[in-house]
Length: 301
Image (cartoon, rainbow, N blue to C red):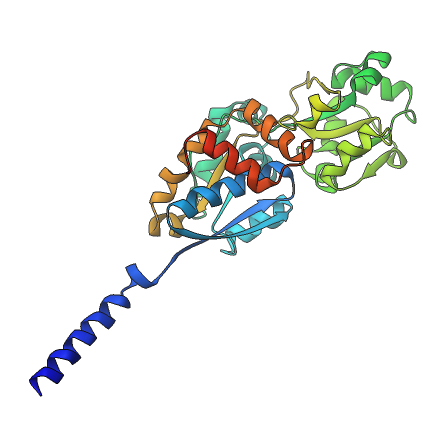
């Protein structure tokens, strides 16, 4: 009987130990991401770093900014990479150009605003993934266009001459094309605007289906495909520094997330251009591109 009781006690102790939260509850995170290459890469990098640290990670990528934001607020994703300029202009309706064009000021504003909503901004990157307008270098040279002001002047004199390519989000967002036209005082006829998926805007420009395209300053196809960025001489576009944004309850549960993701602040705009080129031009997978960079930095084995 004593032996039976001793065995039973040992079994109960073992069962209690195995069922303790620290041992049986896996550290699981859902990382969200938007629908363009850079976002896929950043989400994959975070996944690899967190998995190495013992987390189980699910990716939910491929959506627009507003959908991703809603998913984060509702707890459908735990973490995502957001841009300071997007948060300031789109989510918080900010309009102060002195704030939106200053990396430190805009980061401080969005960080404080989201703290009231249970969202925590971790340290931002130096990468500036700002919007830009692109033209083929030869075409821009032939027309004498190097700035958005010069583009606006040309459109005023030749309203039907140029076809513009952009995604639906860029057309309507506060820091997008409709407000850009107001700021630069020009108007493109609706029939001269082609809306398409983000990635196709570059392809359409390369193949001559459009003359001007929206783009991101970190995109590797700009140099690889002979495009030129038109200078934003009126400083319309905000600063877009990416940073991990985490739900407060998740960060309190797993405070080590901040330290695990901190090395991503090493990424420069030049690094991001090279990473985007690796996927979009060299056709390497997002996973391999992310892994190669992290390995080169000694961050994963």
